[in-house]
Amino acid sequence: MGNFIWKSFLIVLFVAACQPTFSVQVTSTITSTMPSVPDETPIATQTPVTSFVLPTPNEETMMVIELPEWVKRSWTGGLLALPYKDTASIRPSESILVNPDNGDTFIVDLQREFYYYYWRDNEHLVFFHEGDCEVVPGLISELSVFSGILQTYETKDHPEYILDCYYIPDGDIVSLNYEFSELAVELVDPLTREISLLTDPDDGVTDISIELSPYNDFVAVVQFKGEFERPESKAPIYGNQVSVYDLQTKRLLLHYYEKVGILSDVSFIDYSNLVYMRENVPCLIMIRSLSKKCVHKITDQFPDSTIILTKNSEAARGFGFLYFSQYQGGYCFYDIYTGGLGCPTDRFPSFKNQFIINYSISSFRHYLLVEYGSEGCPAPWCDYPENTSIGLINFYEGELFELGSSDNYFLSSSFQPLNPDPWRPWR
Image 1 (tube, rainbow, N blue to C red):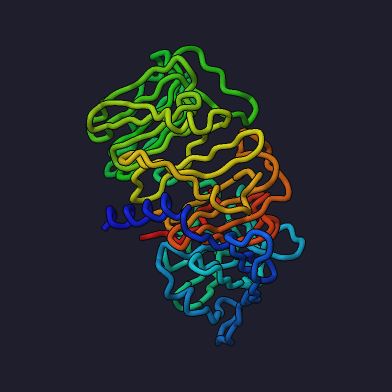
Image 2 (image 1 turned 45 degrees about the vertical axis):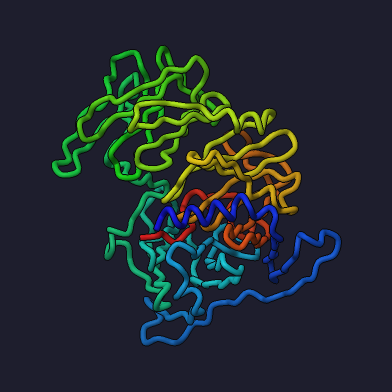
């Protein structure tokens, strides 16, 4: 099934340049444009739907929201939820649900401000109220997207709902111990909870970053051999070697030393293939064959651009990356099996002379959410820019839905597409 999905996706991604693309603009209205007619395009408008609350016996703790059918029935990986407010406010009190298939929106009024939210599973959205990321929230709301029930709890009644505002999945399996002068990796046994050192804190190598494989079989560690000084600013961090450990045997499988910098952000393509950046060249590690190859095709196509790896989704056959130069940026995808290279953002006129500032991709890469603007670049290479916009790409239909200014979605402050993940989870 996964191969079928990916074959379909790749056909669309690399052939769709020959097909018409569609752009829909959603602000206070939804605007539909046809890029194949660049000068004048037909426009259709539609007012976003706002939540309608039905009376319930106990409105202090629960209310029922009449959700549209597409919210209840949408494919479990294809519903987008973002914080929303179309007026000036420090914090949002509404969440907007977006149908990535046609750009339809539905605004849920929570009737109280929130500072963090996340998908508990594919049926429930959780919101934190009355607090911030430094303290436990005073109240918690949970929305069922199937029943429309919005329930409010006191935190003490559901302590299991509490997540750190910067929660790192699987952070309790492997972690970096900062108490050593040379950072070292610790491993936690999932059954006994016993902690053991995976790397030697006195071997002259500082562990900089870690990345788990999808099934927690392996961990990749970017390291610096020699005397390491962590930059004081938020500049990108580089090591000079990458190592892969087998978590079952706690054994070092392989490591590669590079004479040029290795960016600390690495990404598993699947359970046994890893990609990292050697300066500005992506390199693949094939764990099964204990081998490595570097992809110069990408650097050759973007010789004057900075290349940044993106996080991969489930059922990936390759890796995504952002590129940006002095004039423009974009999101691209490279298939490790066919060598195919495609940049979906380059197909839409709306992204001409624009930079992709941030992104979030849905499960199985059906949809891509991007934040973009005419200046700046992704953090930490640039400071967070002003006057950015949000766009939603449907890969299969070749459509772009323009969702308006980022300010309406609070993405310029604590809420960003990458954290928390705005996409309904697959499981």
